[in-house]
Amino acid sequence: MSAETSSSSSPTSASHGPAERAAVIDHAALAHNVNTVRSWAQPAQVMAVVKADAYGHGMIECARTAVAAGATWLGVAHVSEALQLREAGLTTPTLAWLHTSGTPFGRAVEEGIDLGVSGWELDAIAEAARRLERPARVHLKIDTGLGRNGCPPEEWDALCARAAELQRPGLIRVVGVFSHLAVADEPEREHEVDAALNRFHDAVALARSHGLDPDLRHLANTPATLARPDTHLDMVRFGVGMYGLSPFAGEGPETFNLRPVMSLTTTLAANKLVPANQGVSYGYRYRTGAATRLGLVPLGYADGVPRTADEAPVWIDGRTYRVSGRIAMDQFMVDLHTEEQEIQVGAPVELFGPRSGILASEWADAAGTINYEIVTRVGARVPRIHVNREAARRGAEEKK
Image (cartoon, rainbow, N blue to C red; front, side, top):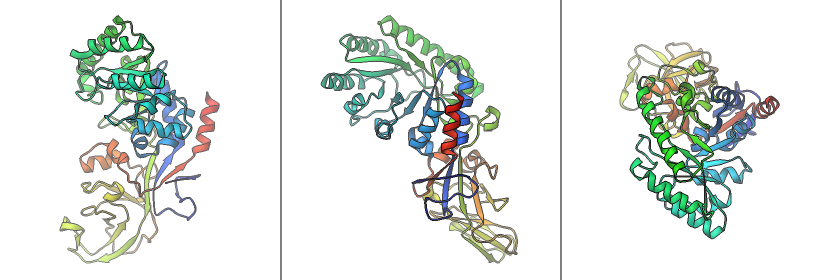
């Protein structure tokens, strides 16, 4: 569910006034972040990674803004996501890289979707291309140390040989060679990144020795894009940074001239007076120290708010408080530390976003996780309200 409004300060639903809860997506910030990374990465191309519903921000709308702002590729995990982009009219070159035995390779070939290949998929993709009498576009993936998908180095020579064999009759076209970095977000481990980069260069050289001539070498994720220009090569894959989140512990997005895109907002649902020593929420993990008022925030783990985020910051009507007690499925409580009803029901609440200045990483710290997870897990019950969308796209197009 999504809606358009002109300002993120008072999010509104599509037709029913103030939203009960909302993930407000600021497309001006998104376009700014794409422009920022283009300046970091040039002359390399920029792939906007919009997998997992654009990290919870709304895949179709974010893809449109990213392309308007200058991203020349889109990246997703699954072919099903790429097909959604095509169905929405997005014809931008798109790569999908995570496949199963049920992946619809034929549909991907029909729609001109590029396919990542780690090994077993190659023959299945070639067979789909044979049936359709249309060459499949593939990017061969080498495992440079992450240990997930990607061809093991010991099998790389055989994979390249088979790809060359299938390319000669026109069943496939090897468009790219790529890999993914394991520790680029830990700057003190630069030697491990160096080793992965060297393995990648060796893999490209071996592919070329088989007569393959990939147009695109891509290795850099967001942290490598921001901190390791030697990994930029022909294209960078811009994921979490596009949404204004820093991939580095202890460094905020402002360090890299990035702006947070999502604000998670609601309004205060209740404000009640309770006595001292009042137990709060399941298990009484929090008890009031004195007579006080408890504010009820109508967001919970069914909305993606981490149940384990003890004492996470919450902005309510101009002041920052802390989660008090266990977060429940639909709600959590905040000790307002006053006996006076200073805050009215309906007052604005923001868990994170530019208005409060609270970062998603602060919720991540409280929950013992990473900021990527905080935004990606925001649930479907929370509507995405897209703001500054048309203006951001017009402005991006004018800058080109």
